[in-house]
Length: 151
Image (cartoon, rainbow, N blue to C red; front, side, top):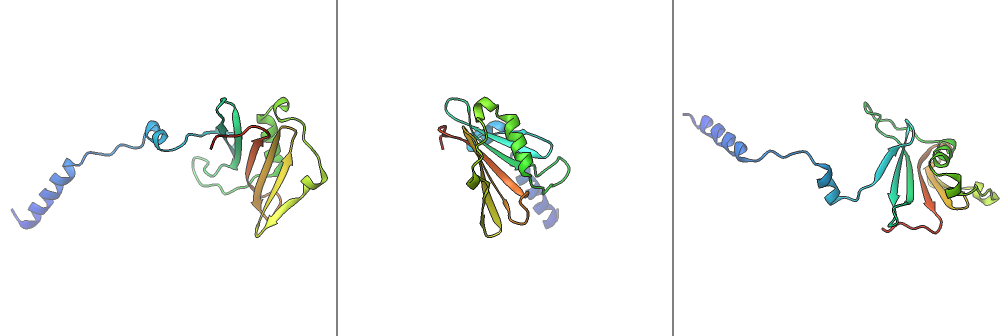
């Protein structure tokens, strides 16, 4: 047998003795990372919920879906999209009426980004996006007044 054949056989024996690694399972990921619940709020928006110790939702994050099952999608959300999903997901009795104060119509700009708040009686929606267009919302955070999440 030539020297190359011995080397090839040695490598083959070495690789045959290494156990095959299985793909990550849900329980393996759960042991390592905090679990969040993500829902398809619409064809283009994901809603991720975090739960408090009482079991109720304590925080929601809305984001444009970045993968449609076939390709990457780099869209943003509009103010109307965010308000529609929030008001659809959180009943009026739990969110309260929208508070329309003059200062709450203003956006805060920093560099190429902006943030804006939409106060309700029981929740606050805070959005962030790019300054290029006011409809370029990249993320929305819904937090409950007087209800905190354990960090």
